[in-house]
Image 1 (cartoon, rainbow, N blue to C red):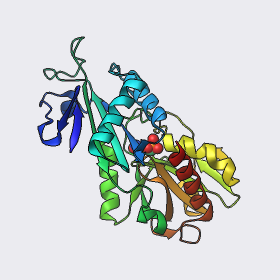
Image 2: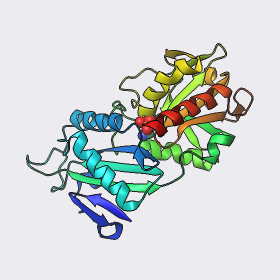
Image 3: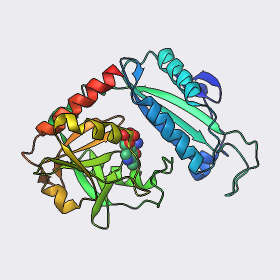
Image 4: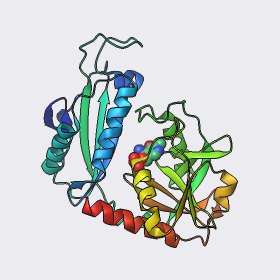
Length: 281
Ligand code: PMP
């Protein structure tokens, strides 16, 4: 397995980062994940644009332009022979003596990438549908930044794992913000697709944006607004989206069946449309 670290393609075992890396000490860094289908990157331009924005928001210089990133990603995917899976990218503020404030100008960011071969399209969970639980959203106030500081999401996902379900939907002031690693959607009984509007309270999901564009083709109206846990329980359908899950049907929330308790037809249609678009891209 070959990974990328600071300008070099290296065997996984040889890629080492110093203990003073600010990613390790402070979670002072940004990450991105793009899916790979048929050896090609899905929605990658949007992922790279979000990476650039996240880095800008915390004052880390983006070490590459989009073309530079894509060249490195493509080479890494090819070197690992990955046909289907994920490419993970991470940039931290670099290595410096431990001090909360930024290190001196000229400190080079640490840049790392790895691939994971995994089934994205024929995911069995997409056939059965996922169960989710709701948990309190314990995160900070800049969730629009794709920071590697993921402790609240780690704890949320662990609660889900202990409950034997696939995902945790995080809740603030009674409304669902998003999943621990996904965007949350419901379809109301009036055939309206509902998802929370973008703000600093959630990550601007790239898959979310693509799915909203496809909603018209599934004959769905869209409402970007807050929705409560109670409203989710009563939804006709529910699903979540992410680069790795694509469009994942939700069949149960907190032990309550959603709709018919099976992946709903509109969710299935959106998944099909998204897969079609992804495979063309
Ligand atoms: N929200 C959170 C908190 C996430 O971690 C993710 C996945 N990284 C998403 C939403 C989905 O974003 P995307 O569709 O860009 O993968």
